[in-house]
Length: 281
Image 1 (cartoon, rainbow, N blue to C red):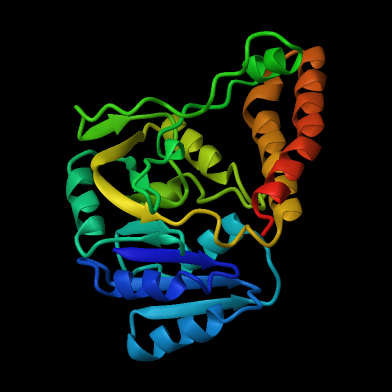
Image 2 (image 1 turned 90 degrees about the vertical axis):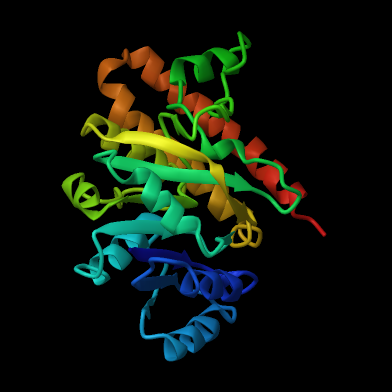
């Protein structure tokens, strides 16, 4: 199994993340792709690379985005394993996490599998189980009608593998053959919504999307995004608009397309203000 980690100002968690990945069962290669960190991230990654030949890193001279970096890491690990795991630098796995995911995925055919993500207080992350965005509901909510349904789905612990429409890009496991067949991540996204896009294309290619409800992973959210709320919110909204144009716009009326565009971008200043206030000292 090859693991790809994309870093950007990840100094708070990358040391623990890589230490855990190096001790994880079944990991044969670790590729770290850095998007122009200006903290101590690269120094930490270099130390791990010197101590473990499975760890290699790519230091991008700029920040081309999460999707580009994921594809870079997957290409660099080509031939090292038939399974790919994409793990955020703020995800801290246990020694058996990835091996258990791989065991659950065995015999499932083409599958894109996520884990039950929890924060430091043990609160389960709703982003681990999502539906596709409902843009008609989003527009109705913006016009004062029924509020748009959230993307999060209810947790069904009775199912070890819970089928969903989309999982979080914080931790994804999939066969390399599936990743290659659907063309990897869409590099037109800079940050956010690329995981929704990957899941949708995988589903359309016949793959199963599921969450392993009994495998929990600590996810220390927002480590890289705290210092750049404007950048993060801008690309989050830009990614949502790209997703709509790609999957929904061709079958929607002109008026609905214009309405969704307005709803997304009128929401942007409010979302930025909230993110800014959230991270004030």
